[in-house]
Length: 320
Image (cartoon, rainbow, N blue to C red; front, side, top):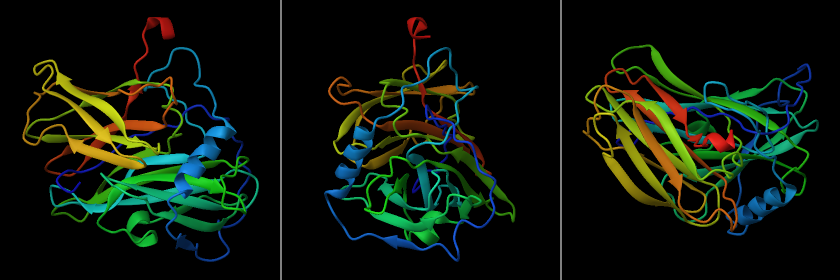
């Protein structure tokens, strides 16, 4: 978006399965209350440290592919891209976000907006009093209407909170988001769907691949990285296809609590076969594993339709 459009497919990794209670009423007594918190530069590092101390599940063992994925509720969730912004082909993309509280008690829900190429402290919001025995709640144009951030693109980090505003370690959330636009010149819509991802599902992996993309005269492709750490991290982005090996190879930095999304190359042509974007974490995992997510999307330049793919961990035979 801005000059490119966004899309992504996300999956949740490695959290206990939560059994859904039969819903009996709405998620809120009335309209949900969403309030923006006052700036506090210590808040996000504190929340991150508390979530890390609470412990994260280990990744599941055994053979795994993106064709068969694990989809679970999680202690906190991330939508790697969400916005209320114009695309490159006359589109206007909005994100409808659905959330469900599976933790057993009524909670507040923290929402951190990790802006694209953002610097400084990200804004944080609180959705007050989400019930645990209720139907999931869908927020239409969540970024524009509820967060008041029309014209912005970023990632959403969503955290269950206790009465003190700390992470609720007994809490569990699930979610879904649909990013959509009216098809240029028509009354119908096109959309791309993505579930919520466990932000700590990637912190075990340094090498990822995003497969099945297209970049040519018909399609444009963006890659993206979300850094949920309080430190700048470096990544290698390598886009290639059979007819254009190594066409894009660059090292990028992603700032703390921010998202980076870029085109693989405006006007570049990787041919008609599928293209793969490799996104690798370059810093030292042994020091402190980093919660991060990689993704990419391809979008039809005529219709605005497209597809999205989450980065897949690159295991060798000995890992399987």
